[in-house]
Length: 130
Image (cartoon, rainbow, N blue to C red; front, top):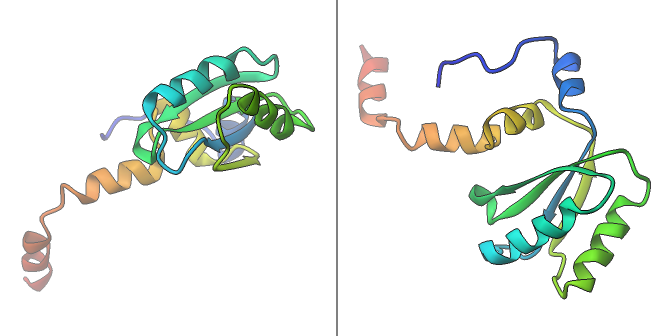
């Protein structure tokens, strides 16, 4: 929205977010109740620092975790104990998208899609022709 939300080199910004990233989808499009139930349980795990529900991506969960070699297995077992499935799960190092997500609660793709929906393509074509 035209505001500076963070400054620094890419490495500094990534380090400021801290921890590995885990993206979890309980179902392809999870009901918000299931996402909230999973978030509550995940926040109780000792290596989980933060859990964000991303409603723009089917109520997927984005976790910030302390580096833990078996984090994915622990999370999958905890979900199984709650009788929740695992549609998809992946672990990665922080990215600039993670920095943006931490600052705004949305991914860069979500922001780009929202902005694209506001574009006036007819006016843009007219401007390009001038």
